[in-house]
Length: 332
Image (cartoon, rainbow, N blue to C red; front, side, top):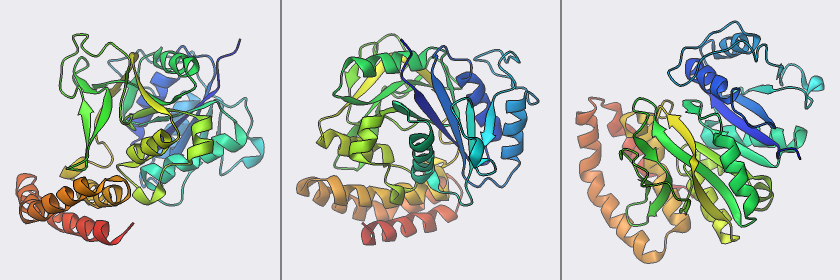
């Protein structure tokens, strides 16, 4: 019996070196039935050409996680924008070139829409381009997804790329008072303490396996969020319909951490984190938690932007924080 079809969706934005290392790890996995949809978010470097070179076998990769091979090259690939008439199941890699940077949410949505129309997969795997995967990571995720129809979203054990035995995240818990997603297991060395399957509030968007039926019923990622909180919003919408978010410990991924958004250390990351906290809380928080959040944000607004600007030595963080605060308060 053939394995369920998985569409693996990877975003690239000026990060071709990370992307081709990720692609090579993916194309060496043991899972038998998958296609890769690469969505480029309007890169300004030579990412697309480098990715094409890789697919043709003309761009080698050095990685401490695997040995590069030419045995699976050249890949059967198609640039969707240029050759829409030759889209078929025989291709391994589909490359979509966006004219704008659509962000994490809509970038993935574009990949999901394409896969839904042309590939009709059973699952969608959203995978950050700055990751490397174990060769059986997808087998374990799909196996668990097939066991229980109430499981809608699944995720692996995620380690630090630079410290391969240190855990970055096994699942997420929502801190409703401070509007934070808490990474369970963060900075812990793996001694087997998270070797049991568990249900969490959400699965981190670094590597997230999503059943097709969940997309059909719940919808796509909220494109208005652009960056951050998308997977949490999706998980809560799925939970309203009774779907669970399952962490699968035998599935393993290594992550380079905030290669695009940069978190609170970069203006773009700080802006969207600040803004989206407000949007998220207005939509989902219960009244007592929302009131506490407002009070805490008012206190933080007097201290946090100054501290971050000095700590990271970047004056642009001050403006980014207050732009995010203003937009978060005024937008839904």
